[in-house]
Length: 58
Image (tube, rainbow, N blue to C red):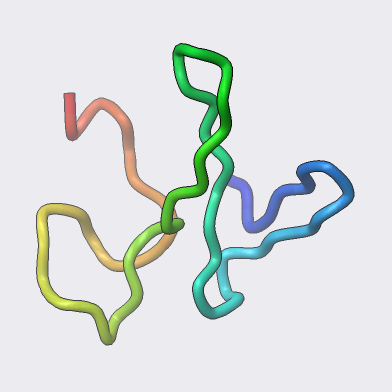
């Protein structure tokens, strides 16, 4: 499992407040999305934390 990434000389770790991940779009652009869900965030479809099993949500 991954607790952090490095992208263009930036190190990003899930425990950092407001951590975001770069996502490459089909047109080649990159957008940043919030990484996971914190305990203090509203309830939703995904579990708390920064990790989820892909096959559960397909």
